[in-house]
Amino acid sequence: MADTVVGDRPDPHVSGDDPSRRDFIHIAAGAAAVGAVAALAWPFIDQMNPAGDTLALASIEFDLSKVASGQQVTVKWRGKPLFVRNRTEKEIAAAVKDDHAELRDPQTDADRHKPGKAQWLILIGTCTHLGCVPTFGGGEYGGWFCPCHGSVYDTSGRIRKGPAPKNLVVPDYAFLSDTKVKVG
Amino acid sequence: MSGHSTYEPKTGIERWLDGRLPIVRFGMDTVINFPTPKNLNYWWTFGGILSMMLVFQIVTGVVLAMHYVPHVDHAFASVERIMRDVNYGWLIRYMHANGASMFLLAVYIHMFRNLYYGSYKAPREVLWILGCVIYLLMMATAFMGYVLPWGQMSFHGAVVITNLIGALPVVGDSITTWLWGGFAVDDPTLNRFFSLHFLLPFMIAGVVGLHIWALHVPGNNNPTGVNVKSKEDTVPFHPYYTVKDGFAISVFLLLFGYFVFYAPNVLGHADNYIPANPLVTPAHIVPEWYFLPFYAILRAVPNKLGGVLAMFGAIGVLFVLPWLDTSNVRSMRYRPTAKLYFFIFVLACLVLGYCGGKLPDDPVIPGLTSFTLIDSDLNSFVWLSRVAALYYFAYFLVITPLLGLTETPLPLPESISEPVLSHPATTPVGAVASPEKRG
Image (tube, rainbow over all chains, first blue to last red):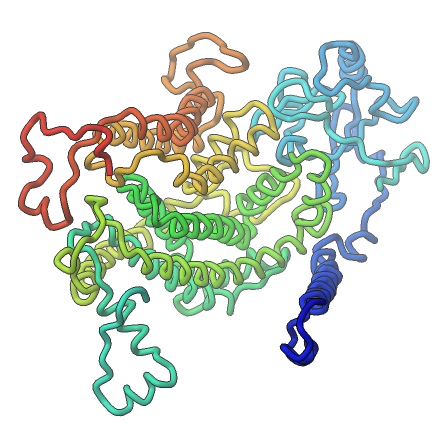
């Protein structure tokens, strides 16, 4: 537009025909609008994430003396079932024996309980396939069997058969005393 | 909406309004005078049936929302209260719950009709894609609605479906937590599902508006698939199709009424009358009937992510169908080979639906043991699902593209009016068009 004959179009600012200035304003206004929408979108997206009170309820304490040998107690933790299993010597031995068997998600039994507490297996009780609750003692390994799509877990909660990709998850927990654990 | 408007305002007030808001003209052009092919059969009445069902679901749903409490401690009890104490609550809830099934039934018939008569082909691709969007929204709405009574099936169905997203690598878990609003399906999940279940039907109504707009630009396809050539090929929508749709709606309501009054729970699952218990999963978890084919595809793949991708792919492939089909002939009336593959496709969908309701490892033929192939017995529903799922994808990705290039269609009529005088069934044997004369 620099070679526009003066007088032909008197003032480009009045007629609004200066493309570079017009483009700049369009781009600047567009960028500001996109930035504003993106900034405003985040609160609307993040409100869906767990709220403060949901996060605050995230840990529980549990008294292990309630669980007899060979049994399991299911408690609710973070809205999900938590398996607390008091394993028998036989079940522990079966789990240790398979430490080097062909596993889909290889882990030794020792990695799945606290040192010296082999009898206590604490797991999140949702199948790693699609989140159903596996039944205690089911399946050919005596661990758990998921009724939804047939995943089979051993007495260490490791996936042995079926569609689930991972072992049952071991949550973060700590022994407060010999009979008390804090989960979460 | 398209073409010349034939509306003539007759009274003074109509002329006054027409110059300010031509809403009467819009209505006249859209549903009264709209030129419609004169040969539409009863498969074309499902659009009207679906419009009626959408209104029906919104009306019953808004009423139910007046009595329902979206809270984990009260949801189940509030639904029971609707059933027992609210005046006619049982009727309105049964109409809403069975209405969802009827709505999906009608949409499936509508879609199969579309596939058979090639209605998705040019120039109706946008119309078809909008229809696919409506179908996706319907599935999301139906799923979230099923969660609201907070029974065992509601809860564990929600767990399984939301966990599907966890199959995505890296971001899966964060997205699942975000969807739940917690560490499991819980009160925040129920609340947001209720909010969205209320919102989505109105979004569906909006897309239906676009769908009808996109329909009225090229006008209806018809059973011959031949374009409208002259005014002789059409009749005004009213009274011809208002009456035909009205009759079809009446017949459809008889079926609907049968379910509501005589078998209101036959399409549901008894376990959903047990309040949700996050610690116990029902022994046999199945989705509602209208999701069973996709559920069968999910289970057919022995890998979590693969199954999820196949399931969503089964819906995704519909969106690109107009570009997969290489045939210029719309109606399968004139495509005898395609017709055969189409009916096998319908059968495959029904087989998938049947498999989706069965336990994967159960034998198809009881008492017969065959041999184990890969991971399961060949005589099992998981293998039957695999065969049917393979055909489902092959139909869209292999058969449809290749058939258009290789088949020889029957001769097309010159116009819509012509086959009234000479139906293809009466065409002399051997009168076959050459492939280059297709379309």
